[in-house]
Length: 93
Image (cartoon, rainbow, N blue to C red; front, top):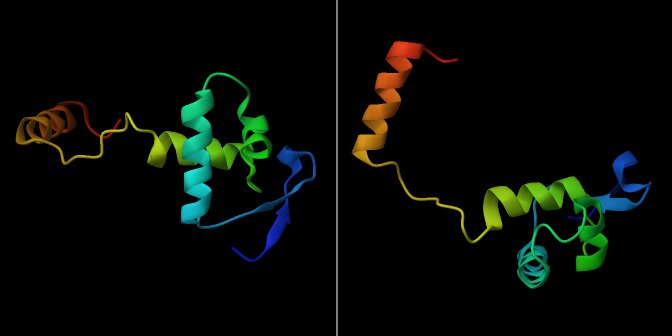
């Protein structure tokens, strides 16, 4: 995380792109657990949490990787069967 980039969506602020560090993850987790994800617009989260990231990047990281309610377990055999049955009847739509 060496290079800062200018983002148009971040009012020209310099932000990091690429892999997140453990420290950044911890900052975002602590901030989101204390404030919640519905209290303020995502574009304001990085500045409030002390991160040099884009709001879109923070939202994506929280919703898809760090959120405590996220279920990241394997699919059960019943779920796999349902997916195969639906795919064979509906296709890839």
